[in-house]
Length: 163
Image 1: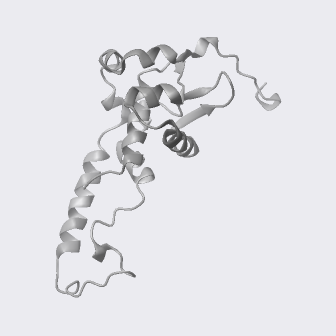
Image 2: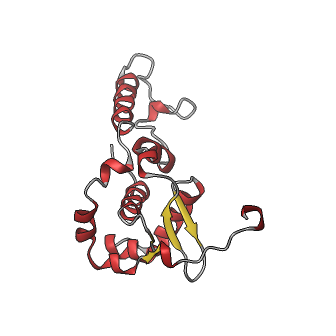
């Protein structure tokens, strides 16, 4: 099984942002760190924001940060949300299945078991497990770290309802 680039880049983005917990990170920084096309990454960040994995701040002083604590972002949840489907073979699609041996074949059952095992493993881990050595990750990410904005320097406008 192979994850799409969309999911791979989603996980990398979450890792990058998680190792900068006190900063708003620019999408450009993530794109440069992983050599990912910025336009593609913007779409991924937007979806991660809609799903609550990221919090996005718009505008000139904007950026991204985690939408919840890394311990509360399960890897299985991210993969399920970002992948288009998990139909490993044709017979996983009841309505589009034209395989002539489906009624006698056990491939769907075996691959279904494998897929459940795959997610059982992913569900045991969180983003926090991936970033347990943030200093090492920051060093490996190189100069892109310098473009993050410390949250302490960001003025946040409060809505009247929050006052």
